[in-house]
Image (spheres, rainbow, N blue to C red):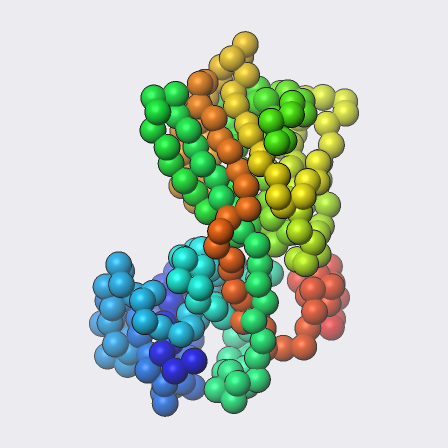
Length: 284
């Protein structure tokens, strides 16, 4: 882990105090940063272009909230790079390190006292009625939700080509085990251990007496379409980013991504300990 890319979040670290602390702790390593932040850290790391910054590095350190880590993990997964998250946000469920633990944890990193945990990801292929195809990867979830209107959308759901049901709802969440503790949980879905090889399909506020979450194996293909009897437009987002229009005649197919997110683990805390501490507010 000699070549390290540091990803700051100026909204969470406006004076780059914590970013500079990380750099100070790792000054014996080759450190890199996006050229967009080069002037803010006073030349303490080598600037790289946005297009090339994941090439030829060994590790990515992301400072910010879960959104920062999710974005870094998605991009780093393409290069099979491990990512270490430092929480500068509120919950920081996915981040390994809190602000007061930076020096101690990075000392362990330098001493190679860490492990890497693999997390499965989702791939969504949007096939438009025009023939255009777009793809999205997600570590947490892919969400189909109603557009700017307050009117419910009508969705058809299929698993491996078999019709499951139609839903009149605010939308639908397809989550990985990692994402089961995020939006899906808020919508009433179950929490999955990260080691479980399944996806969670959770309707958002369905207008139906019996519309429950469906848990499916990670080998299946999940398909959704707009019900053409009530063709109301929707949007698709990946990990809460990029609202892409989803209309009548379009088809979205979801399956396990060929990429895997690799999260650096330094502390001895396991999933259920983090669950108790972060979500229930209990001391470890």
